Image (cartoon, rainbow, N blue to C red; front, side, top):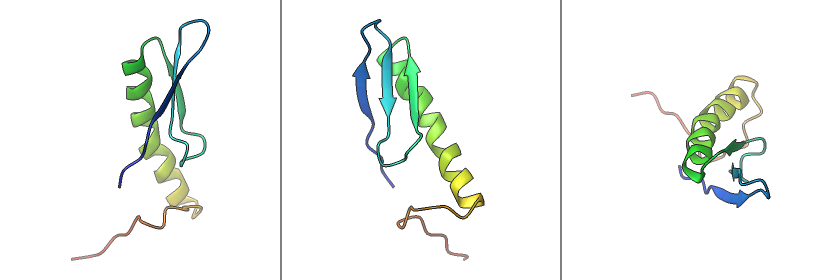
Length: 66
């Protein structure tokens, strides 16, 4: 599973990283790398919350017991 991170820079110099395909996954950082690290840490939490509340819209996410 892959997600695209989109970056933008605020007028005050802060970086914004966002995964547009996962609403709510957005993070600010003083540097682009910091914003990326934060958004990469946030994405699995959002996915887990959606699975727990049965709101997952990630059709590609499948589990199979061995």
